[in-house]
Length: 180
Image 1 (cartoon, one colour):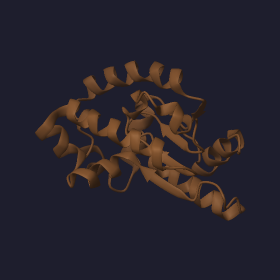
Image 2 (cartoon, one colour):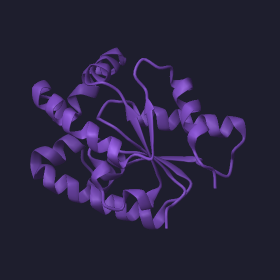
Image 3 (cartoon, rainbow, N blue to C red):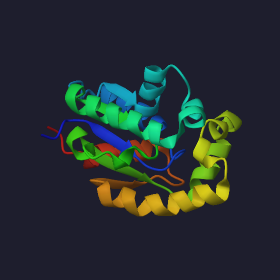
Image 4 (cartoon, rainbow, N blue to C red):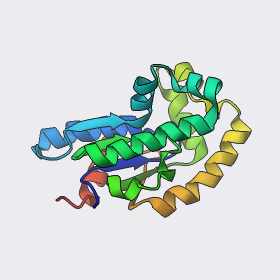
């Protein structure tokens, strides 16, 4: 049975965590208190579980090991989490039980739009450094091109976030959610 969660998917750096935090704030301000009071970030969960950064997990154990950690996290989310906004790592959309966890929302932007967004951030160097798959721009663009079609295929809702105000994005998402 599908849980009452919102799952934000999209390419690394698109703003999933930022949008998730803004959504919780908006929901609380408009008084929809019984829904979506919490934000969980799958990468943060994995870092806590492993007690090390994603970059170190990739470097020491490889991508396959990391993807197994994502699977473990997805199973836990399905069995234990409800009424939560979940921001995910860029590859989390591949989890077989994704649709059981909640409503999947793809935050869509061009590759250049994502890079511009990251470079505008006050801590841009750190944001780029902590994303191992963004270190090689040519390879990252290839990965982006592959994933875009896959994101669209698994999404229940697609929201274009490029060059859009955060408040507008949040209102658009909340306007499209089917409240239980």
